Image 1 (cartoon, rainbow, N blue to C red):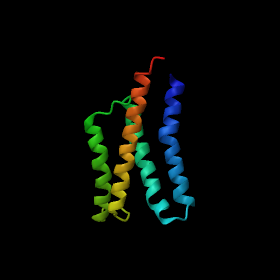
Image 2: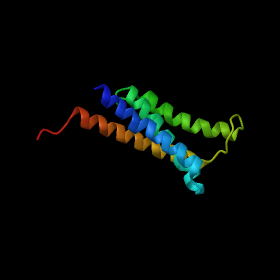
Image 3: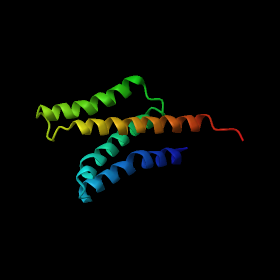
Image 4: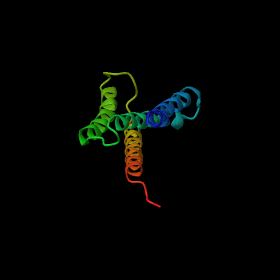
Length: 117
């Protein structure tokens, strides 16, 4: 059981963070550097929350993740935090958060209700 949890965190949280870090520091493609790491980091964040909540993330936290993603860009627009505000960042955040929620939901469904063969 503990090995499953560790491998789950490694695959769904640590691996996307490391890949995002490597892409951000190594890649030369503008869209790859600007958007893919952000998406991977958003995926890792929502996956970490899902793992903490045993794949049954309360609606409040789902909304909070989307609000937080939007808030970061808004605070950049207000120049309260460093960075360049970009609407496409929000789109990428929302896409990867949604993918993370779907993957984690599917993972929970498969683990709790395996097919009987």
